[in-house]
Each structure stands twice: as C-alpha cells, then as structure tokens.
Image 1: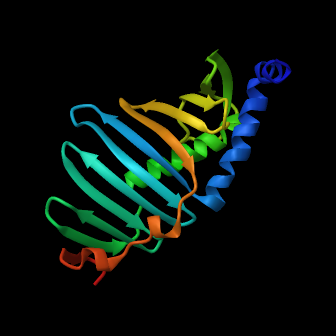
Image 2: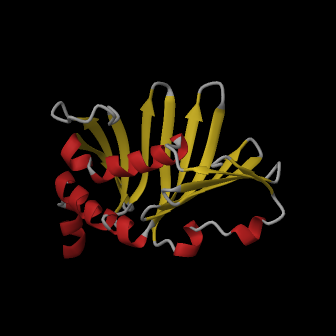
Length: 199
C-alpha cells in the first residue's frame, strides 16, 4: 500500500523525468515503435519503425502495399514488395523517418517545451495533455500532444499529434533493437530489380 501511495503521489514533472530517464536508453539500446499517420483524402498508413544510432528501418503498409526502407545516414534502400523493386539512393530527409524522429525528440523534450497537465490516470497509465509553452523557441514543435505513460515501465505507451489536419500517433514503444534489425542485407534481395540513383 505504501508503494502504491508513493506511485499515486508523483507529480507530472516527476513522472516525465522518469520517462526521460527511460527514453535516454533509446540512443544506446535502440527503440522500436509503430507510427500511424492519418492523412485527409489519403487515409491511414502504418509504419513499424526500428532505430539504433544513425541506422533505421521502416516497414510501411498502405492499403495492402508493403515497402521496407533502410537508412544508415549515408545511403537509403527502399524495397517495393509489390514490384519486387529496390531503389538505392543517397540518404535524404524522408518524411516518414523524420516524423518518427521528430516525435521521439518531442517526447523526450516535453518537460522543457510544453506545459504538461495530467488529464486522468488508470491503474496502468497516466494520460497527459501537453501544450506548447510560449517560451518554446522551436517553431517546428507541434502545438499540442497527447501522451500516455506506462506506470509499470515509465515508457510512453502512445503519443498523438495533430497538425494541419494530419494526425500522427506513435505507439507500442519497446527498448532494444539489434544491429541486424536495422542493417540492409543485399543477399536477401538479390532477385529484386535494382534502381541505383547514386550514379
């Protein structure tokens, strides 16, 4: 009962601080998550993301079509399963990857850039409404964010952002990604049609 009372007595700032301690492990141990993007007229698509250091892998599902994107910060590989086509190019800003990275950064910086209010809590989680602080100098940070934090792990359960009609939700966070999960293996796509735009 004492442990439960301590858990209930925590302030939003204390909860966010503990969440940030766990989120610091993203950089060294890697993080996986699912990103859902709901876009007017285009519908919703989901990306399963794996990130470790400079490397990332995204598995994209959109209306039955599936593609896999790898990046090591220098080269991008984009495999279109329906066409059995592999496009290789120099790394560029990908909206899919940037959205995930930007939103993870927003989560980690929420205590500094947002006014955080506890909306409700259950036995499993805290539900926060985060409003961008007027002192936040980053113009790209979203104005509002809904954040759910697990009471058992202090990891985010989900975060949802709506900007210009587009809703981005990150969910199913897990710490721990292997080098193999984020590294492109050409042997597995030897029979694909190769389009190399680097030359």
